[in-house]
Amino acid sequence: MKILLYSMNFAPELAGIGKYSGEMADWLHARGHEVRVIAAPPFFPHWAVFEGHSAWAYRKSEHNGITVWRAPTWVPAQPRALARVAHLFSFMVSSMPLLLAQARWKPDLVFVVEPPLLCAPAALLFSKMLGIKSWLHIQDHEVDAAFSLGHLRGAGVRRVALSLERWLLSRFSRVSSISAAMLDKARDKGIGEGRLVLFPNWVDVSAIRPTTDTPDTANAAGGYRTELGIPRDAVVVLYAGSLGTKQGIELLAEAAGLLADQPDIHFVICGNGPSRDPLMSACAGLERVHFLDLQPAERLNELLGMADVHVLPQRADAADLVMPSKLAGMFASAKAVIATAHPGTELGNAVAQRGLVVPPGDAAALANAIAQLAHSPALREALGAAGRAFAQAELDQNAILSRFEQELVRCVADRGTTTPSPLHESQP
Image (cartoon, rainbow, N blue to C red; front, side, top):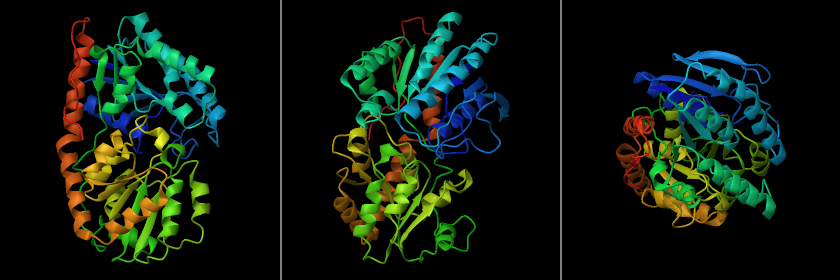
């Protein structure tokens, strides 16, 4: 089967959407499918084009036998609302010639990853021209999130944007998303049950696994503790991920300040993004808060294993519009998780049996939960074991991608009579 992956973010060596797109392409290619990729030059989470890539030129490269075309894309240093729109628009325009050039290859299916939804019209036009299937995968409900987070405003603008989104979604052969709540959101927008597919994020449980905290071992979590000057017997509270507006990351500085009188608790914040500098300023003077830049993929297991407690903040107004992809790795690492979420949300449900859930925006509640786990090693171990078991049973990469492959085959063969089956039967 020939699959054209149209994903702005394609960076297999990083975390987030780019990593999942890369792993999916690699997996399908290894299974014998022909895969081609159209993407922007890698820029996230630094919001700067990576060394060796160009923001202003078309580039063609090979990744593990997969042909990757990079379209020139304007990347703003400060990704504010209008700048984000211009950034997405630049990729939409520059990638269209690459998309149309694939007509000679004639794929069986074009697979579009949202964000950005701006690429959907070109993908639909391409699929209609060639008479092939189209699949939209929603990593973030970006239109809803843009209004909820205040990036876009105005009742009239919202009505127009949501109407256009509904029109676009209704024309794809399949629409998938990463959580039941996000799929419900697509259902609410008029997408028929026969075209919806649940396609959750996954984790390679053989690569992310419990580590032995032995500093004289090359792959031990002790390596990071030594580099950061953190005592072996300290409790490490780790946030590893992008530092953007959806995360509510400022809560970590407040919680760290409330726990400043507890010398056994250290915070490690690993990542990059527009909120990093303000967060560092807010943590100035807190000697047990440590910052790391985004780390290489080969050290991800070591990084996650350094933690005694993972923290996963999320703003209340982003609930069920996004599902943090980093959660799967946290569970697989067999360490306890604290998330900020309201009961009944997808994130709250996922963490409730495998960690602690506190209200979004409540720094005191977060600090109390951290203190509780810091002084309860048995509880940390039990919650970590529950998370690891869940990752092995429900989030395994091979199991999820095998079911996804079956749905791709069904979609291409569909003449309007088949109904997708869920890729993830049980929900957290």
